Image: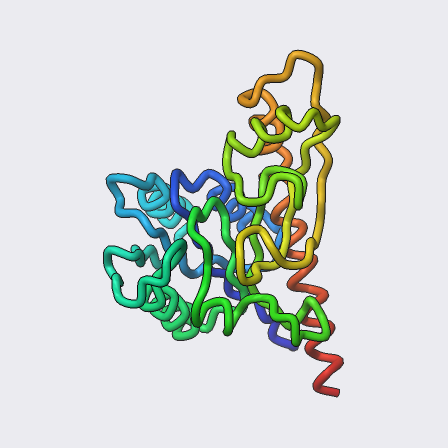
Length: 231
């Protein structure tokens, strides 16, 4: 019997972790062939509900998901301005690599990724295929129109620009903010009378349904690509 390899996923999250929860449910009900083994937050438990959410999910499904806090406070060395410190980036990279993770998914992670983490897992201009990168981000709006925005502020930007649609976008993580090749876009129509709150709520619903399939498809095609390059 051929042993089936299940890719290991690490999630980076800053807040409540509702998108991470939706993704973990998808790994358990068969919608995506992946296993979340590690969740890292840049905020402590009293400031980020993702900690308690992951603990609850681990108990529910009998999982062994490691939850870690790595931030500029825990690793302050190498501050290069906006975003992660270099020490923070290296610490995440070391933990992810040690756990044998094949893919990093940013799900509501509110820091610019840089340093060793980008060099090791992110999209680089030298890559000849998107499948050479191993880090994705989910964004609640169209790109590049709403780059460098987050959460409900992205929907505010969509309305301010007078766009007919918002989008849930999944892209590879590259140097900078909201850069890197787009993997998928899912349109969310702007409805007459929409507020930023109502629009953002619909984008979130789309995100939670679509994201597991996008990452699952990417991992499957990446496996095919890497297998072909070894032949």
